[in-house]
Image (tube, rainbow, N blue to C red; front, side, top):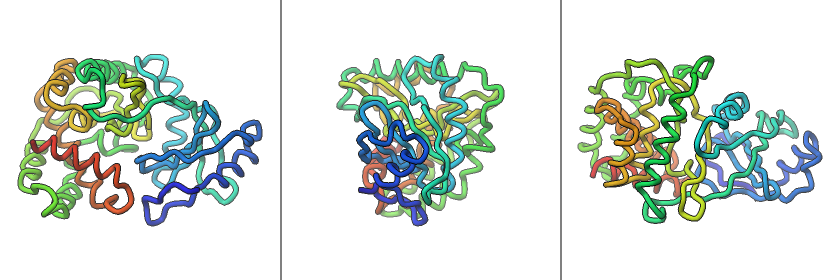
Length: 297
């Protein structure tokens, strides 16, 4: 069984490929059960390996650089963060017709959850804000700079053209006038004028895990970088609403300009996502639609 393809030129991955790769490079794990993980993630195909591990294979060429970055930084950041994050156990090499480096990871228990499935949304907001604060306080020396790894950590002006085009493509699907007004406000907000800090880069509802309704882990650090942390505010409209969003902002003590840029980042991500993945990623598109509704409410 293969995960559903999300990109026109995506590499085919399936259980047999994972088995061949393990047999060739990590035979100690080759006889464990392998099962595709149903995920809205767009950059990696994920397979559960036994009960305690997972295999992550980049789907597309632009994701291959994430492997080295995660292997370098995840073990260094993890001890200083208040929530669990994935820890790489082994790095595989291109082999068996598969063209990219790939990873074996520690498996983290948990599921995605919407705001109405969380036991205590306000406590979740506090705990996630504490995670972001802890990440931002870590020494960024030598970290992957935003301009080299993730445009979300840079000025919104770098996303202006594609964001406007994407909003136009959603005419009849969303309130494009309201979306443009939010985007214009974000562009006019003051730029980040402090030293660059760590950001997760893709802090959305699909990358937050809950165990029995309680926040347990943050996953998928492929967008990890150093720059403007406003992009990590996307979760305010992806997961939270009303009081819990207010608690999240208060706990982070975010200034007005950064908050407005964060809302712009959330809008940009969602409007770009929907047209590209409309027919290949219904779960992710649903998340994006929900976030746009929260942003424009």
